[in-house]
Image 1 (spheres, rainbow, N blue to C red):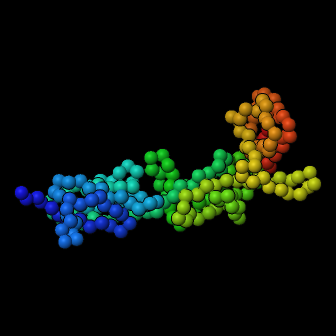
Image 2: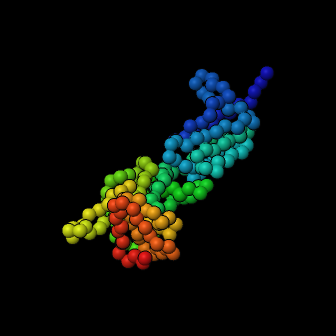
Image 3: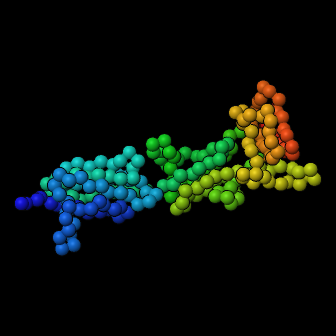
Length: 212
């Protein structure tokens, strides 16, 4: 009983599903068999070739590629890009991503991401819980979370900052009929047809340029 088999290389940064057989430490793949290459964590496939294969394709999420073995040894090449998500708090806008895959924006390693706010007012920015200077960040080797702090002038005329998670942003969709105690921030043009009512100790920060 004879079986036609061929060799196939694995590009750097990828793994390959199990071969049909390994002989003297050489892996062989069966003619007509389909095998899967998987990109390493945080990498996507932006280019893939499989010379000598019967067919090949890249998955919709760009995380894997499949190759069907034909009648020859297969030589593969792959172009991988390290990408990460940048999750932004509501009200923060981000510059264009490197790529959108299945509805999710991804930013590549080393890419500069510029952010701003939807509306007016002065804010400070936090990346993964740490305050940064300016309004941009360079993507490293991890996913990022963007938040904003809101400066305000206290009753003594001193500037203070409400950190992320220390306040609630009021939008046109917020129910304002009975706001509990806490800190609330209005950014940009926010209009309500009914009265805004607070209970207990509530604090309202109106950002510069607010229309209310």
